[in-house]
Length: 179
Image (cartoon, rainbow, N blue to C red; front, side, top):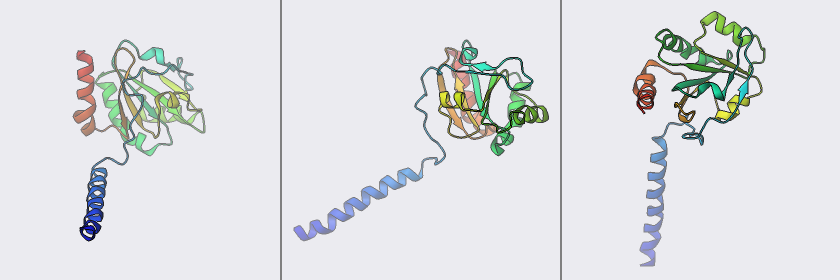
C-alpha cells in the first residue's frame, strides 16, 4: 500500500501542475488586470500640451461615455492605432481624451499630433506620470472606457484596431450608453 502511494502521489501532483500550467497558457500574457475597474476615476488635473488652450482633468469626463487614451510620440504602437482614432473622430463616435505620457521633449507630442492629426477632445501633458498613475497605466497605448458617472468600466492595453473595437470596445460603449 505504501509503495503504491509512492507512485500515485507524484502522479497526482504532476496532474494538478499540468492543469494549472495549461490554464495559464490560455491567458493573454500582455493583459494586466486593473484594480480600478468599476471605480471612479481618481482626481487629477493635467496642464495643456503646447499649442492647446486647455488641459485635461478628471472633471472633464463626467456626463458622457468617453475614452481616455494614453499615448506618447515615442510609442510605436501608438502610431499604429492613431489612424483608427482619427477615424473615430471623423465619425464623431464619442469624445476621446488624451494623456501625452512621459515625453522627454515637451514639443514632441504637439509636433507628432500636428503631423498625424489630433483625435482628442482635450489633451493633458503628463511628463511626471500624474495622470498615468491615477489610471494605473503600465504601458502605452492604454485606453480606458469611462461611463457617464466618471467610473472606469474597461481597460484596453495595446493599440485599438477595427477588430478589437468591433468585437470588444464598441459593444461595451453601446451598453454603457443605453444605461
